[in-house]
Image 1 (cartoon, rainbow, N blue to C red):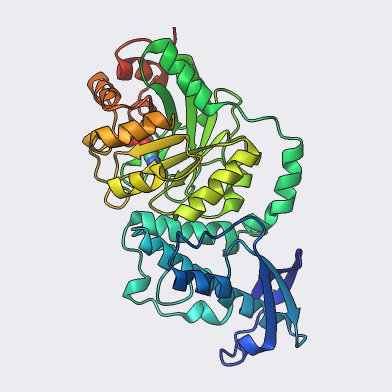
Image 2 (image 1 turned 120 degrees about the vertical axis):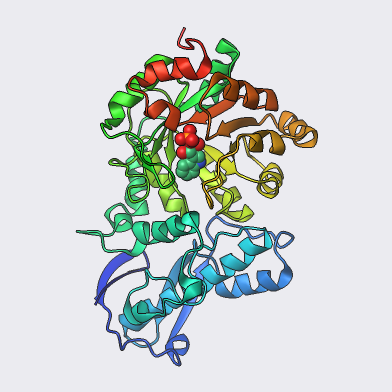
Length: 406
Ligand SMILES: O=P(O)(O)OC[C@@H](O)[C@@H](O)c1c[nH]c2ccccc12
């Protein structure tokens, strides 16, 4: 069985035999030291016993140095994978303590994406995703890191070092929030983030003749302040990575579970990325928002319920918050969700922190736009109602009840 392991920054291909793991001895075979290059764990955020385990088990983003006591690389690889899996289990504990119901990985066995002896792990009930968001998240992990996409794994085709190098010559990012503010001031209506998406798990194929660049151009002509491009291939049928149209500022709409994806999006022309609070812990959001800032990207942090909203409003450095009217676990859409989350107390925090709120999903008519605007949003994210129009540019005029391009 083929396996790949990165030791001391070198990518090495190894052959992993199904026999190579002996659970009783893998821990004693190797000394594993890890360091935390950029994450500091605030002990006040996490309960002390978790914190103690965190120090023991370390973080998924840690840099790993392995000193093989025996000369078997295969066993080193297995030890690393088990360690990683243990750390992921710790993550689940932290996430659960913050009310996150989406499990990042199957709970009762190492995830499907692990090769080697774990490939025969049981497909029992807890290892079946409970809803579509969980399924997407589990698959995303496989897609970016472990699954064998020919000829190489996605992450290994573009390792972080290569992405960082590519960024040295990348054009600067454009001001996503600035564009939304300017549109709001110019039109008196919420700034439009117009979404380029071919399909979704809830709606199926939305548009058959789907040419992203044509749709993007029509959006810009119709007065969109920013674009959003869905890049998930399996569930949203995207046919490109975050295409850099070089039109208005661009949001790369991905299910981000790994900081590597942020770098990748930046090299593909993104000016902003989506962070979903229902999937990411507070620490991860803070960490990823910091990465975004160093890369000049805007983070749109998406919430769906009150608990997520309060978590996100309590974090430092948040500038753009999206309220998704669609429950990604059930697909139910209800635009009154925007109003429900924007009560007087939260609106006050939003004003104090100078946060822009984006109303997302299920917006089809001028009354829908007025409704979320009155609730307090200064921007909207709209896909389906525009994509399915023959002329998406005219779709924008219909949506706002007037031509917002002038
Ligand atoms: O097509 P709609 O209902 O106008 O929705 C657009 C956008 O809000 C939706 O695509 C979306 C919002 N958040 C997401 C997170 C992942 C995938 C998709 C989304």
